[in-house]
Length: 97
Image 1 (cartoon, one colour):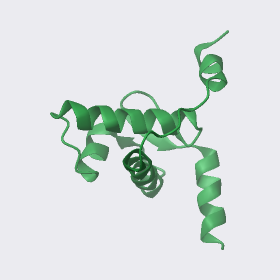
Image 2: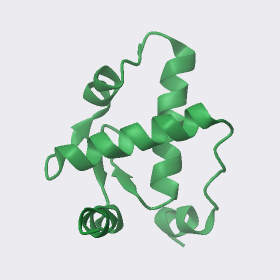
Image 3: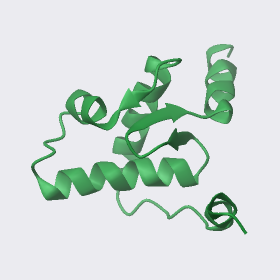
Image 4: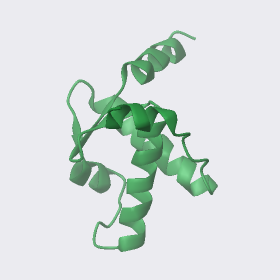
């Protein structure tokens, strides 16, 4: 069994607070906005005004990205994030409304 198969089997964790969902929403919007170019974590943190020297803020951003990856909305190679095909399709559907 490959690691990516194991990740797909895990359920995405439920956001613990409205702030977590807001951070996820903003991170996804930025990743969608930068498409087709991947967005580096440093750039993402800067755009979200996250102080990477603050451990709590850095962990919150990491958790938000992780949750979006597990939900199938973002892909990450550990250094950059990019929206998945599903996220891009959903954005197109929302724009057509």
